[in-house]
Length: 302
Image (cartoon, rainbow, N blue to C red; front, top):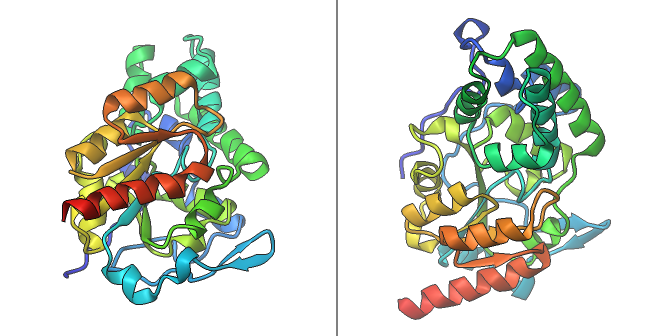
């Protein structure tokens, strides 16, 4: 299979549109990433299936994938797991939305973190910018945006964690996996590095900047499947947003709704189900069994 073309992660300063400041609330600059230990190979691309770690370190113990699954089965069996990042792998949504709500309030539109979660979660940076400026009825001042971005970076350094139980869930699932997120690549790399999840996905990390239309369009998930040589019918998407679930369904993929991060609520679980999720879970401990049920269902159709 022909590999996807490489893509540039960070726009040049003179190419940034007016109001770019709000976008910086959702990403860290390359320079700042290097300061926290991000690997030098910031710009990543998918060249087909890249072998991922066969063992995982959890609580200082090496854990192997369950059931003694062989590498041959991993490469030939149905199922590519496609993980969203924010709110699924890393518990970042509340941190980011808190800073965005604070900025909106400073600019004259009082907003709580809970409201920001409802308004902005699941959107790519372009849509976040458009929605924020539409609500404010004016562009966002650059200086305030950069200040908020610095504060968010500090929040990430101090508080960002992996979603509880996600490492154990990944270790228990003997299938290929990747990340496909609406977040800019800079923020994806930062989040995965800070939480120690980067080695679990290798180079198989996709951002909405690689496609013409982000979620709820199916483009991003189809790109991930095509790049890793999997038919959409053999993919299971794990998402915490209704837009992500809608994108999975539009792509012809199974979808698991996750409503277990710190920003989640009973209402989110209901909305994920209404959006078309095949099943909704509230804990990563339930992910392996949810995936296996969907895999078994798919096999029975063959």
